[in-house]
Length: 533
Image (cartoon, rainbow, N blue to C red; front, side, top):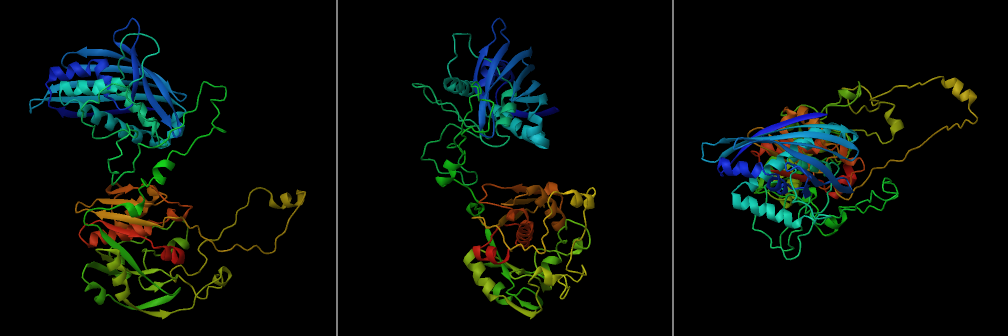
């Protein structure tokens, strides 16, 4: 697999100073986030053997890379070539920096990189390889830019990294380069999450005063306990990594290895970030007026008392929402795909707890008060309780479909009659009954949406299939998938129930747009989840 990347950034340092730092492997390499250690190759002053921390999931180790400074034209260009192997795969890469005088008096650094990767790591990463690479290379560049504040600051970053590096096994020349490769490989260590902890500083080495790069690595030096948890991202510096000794006779066998769950310490210490933990300035809250009937025609909805309640920003009925959106896509063939699903009832409710109106207010207490003020008049209709009753099509729940059977087909494979005839034993079951059940995760479903005035939608949710969720929202809201940013943090259980929460996400987005783009949070109550999910 071949990948190419390029970009540029500006620093305040003069071009000569910037070049002297980027073209010196012993100064350039240690500023990269996954630096472990390095040594100069014997007899070659431009080639270094670099060790970097890598890992996939809970399996971590050290990868060795040979990096060479192949081009050094002061103060214009520096280029590194690297080759190595990791996790049964081989890679080659070229990284170059071209420097120009910037109008601001500093230096513009134009960077480019090409990488070739071969081996089983591609099957592990699947189609997400390029996305991971782009994200991690961006962090490398941010780290470089953060270090190139001044020559003194850059040197302090290098000194700190060297102080934390383990001593070489035998006396050799000073350690050397790693180039953009180290950070590129480091993205592998978060391919399936986790990463090795940063090595502890050596005793007696003072902690240099440095500016933390804008995009820190996943695993950092443990922060002092006095620091408050990040309000957006979970604390990650207390994760536990278990390394498998690959030099032992059983080192290649993952099955049977005792691998401790890396997330436990963070979660049991209260550093998890679940959907309801998320807060934003000026955030509003959404609730749903739900039908107490399993099948009924909506005759009238009066929201006037709810809208007059101080602190209530918006009340929308299902019919009003349907005028702003397109029914959700239905997956399957006719007649089932003919169902018009707006995520909320427009004229008829078809299950107990189906939403008929939406309330947005400044607190959940106000939301609940406003829900109690909405008056809905129903014409109660006959219900379908048993699946066998539904086969009689009396009543038909979705008139547009024309039947309660949304899909019927027969699959045949091979000679069925011969299979029964030749079978040693045949078991015949006259009637098989499956009880009604639903999984009940500890965390209920929900969504937090912000529809900006630019037309972009920021969606935080606990949906189980965010890619499909974005596709569903795109058609429902009439926007492109590139306008939807899907985010998920910790999820308190799924068991299949959170794969179809796009209805809540869509309604939250509509609510945000209705109140001028404010952040709107919706989280199911336990009662709602049990009664009507």
